[in-house]
Length: 544
Ligand SMILES: Nc1nc2c(ncn2[C@@H]2O[C@H](COP(=O)(O)OP(=O)(O)OP(=O)(O)O)[C@@H](O)[C@H]2O)c(=O)[nH]1
Image (cartoon, rainbow, N blue to C red; front, top):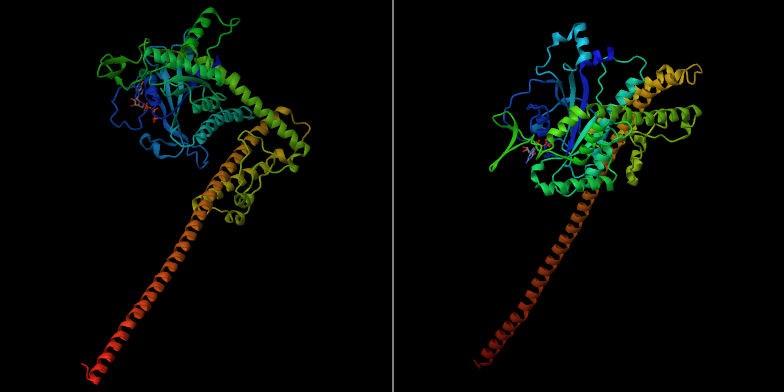
């Protein structure tokens, strides 16, 4: 009852993420789902001004929670501007929190929530529950030449939410205001190509499903004829089987589930992937419709769209199921993996093995040599436990020897490094390291101290990796520029040489031609002279 009362006050926490290519209709869907024009479109400045649903209230407006996957800056909150979003490189992840009043027709007033009367009412009905709903949206996926950075950005975000819960769980004194931001379900919007899943879809869903339940969704389903849609759905589910894509399947357990649940899940499994259509326009009855020159289509019409079914799945039949799977299966797996890696690392450390190994995080000091050999490769994964207690911190001389000349990069590198040093210093000064291997320490306490410590370490390593990747990238660019410049210089030298040669040749030719001209002139004058001499002789001889 106490837990229920607390949950009642704070609202039932529920988080949904929308992932998919740009223009697949995520924003329109989000507005349709909440029946309020909360999310602005990227290009539609003249979107119709519709009324808000009185049951929905914005608790925290849309904020960027993670951005700029290229420079490895850790995630943080910032204002979101939909019209400027596409100027950012990589992808942008935003989060919006709303409160949804459920059950009763009228949203409950806060005053009615006090006193024991409300708690007794709860036992009879859930009519005054509210959902503290967090909607996470990705922007710009599929717009980059190389989308692998976007995948990393999204999975890092999801992992971070798990890490926060893990760190909180293992804390001796818990924060009563802690907000669980784990994503319970993700809708992956498949573009209406009619050709099954793309390699990118397979890869993205595989990565997402480590941290969240994933429902594949066919967006803009009005692009298909009924036959085409059936074929497209079948192709997608064939690809799901063929490539072992772990999407959420509405599976049944004949021993556990009642007949109603079995039938419902079987029907939903047959419908998968849900094909939806959405719209920003409403008709005079207040229903969302798509208006075409030839007529009008209600987006909630079950005969042409699965939108209503999807809404019911998200907020009705599978609401608790998604939360339970996240907590009991996905998070538990992650937690077990993480804690076992932590305790393995702990044991290794106690055996003193870590000192024999090389640092897991390559330092800036070997950066120059890596660049000169052109063999920079980062083999560390974000989930990898650190193998050295203290990552190597190069001195400022080493940093200044770095190949990159960018002042912004150098400044960022220094600030991250300073932060790292501070964290490492704190860790060194913590009581745990001052009394290592204390025999009266219980295992749990040991783990509770170790987990946040390892998470910090991992963050440091992740930061260093990103920094080093960035440095390697800019160094490579610099090297390429140097090579280009050298090539151009060589070309210019060659041209200069050629020009000189040409110049020399042309001056030689003009000299030769002048000489030959003189030579050709000489016999003439000679002739004239001879002629004149002959004339003179004839005059003298009196022949003239
Ligand atoms: N035909 C059709 N068009 C749709 C549907 N849903 C949305 N659209 C339109 O598709 C365009 C893009 O929709 P958005 O909701 O902005 O797409 P998005 O995925 O949020 O795009 P980004 O903000 O770029 O990530 C808009 O012009 C919508 O009106 C649909 O079901 N059918």
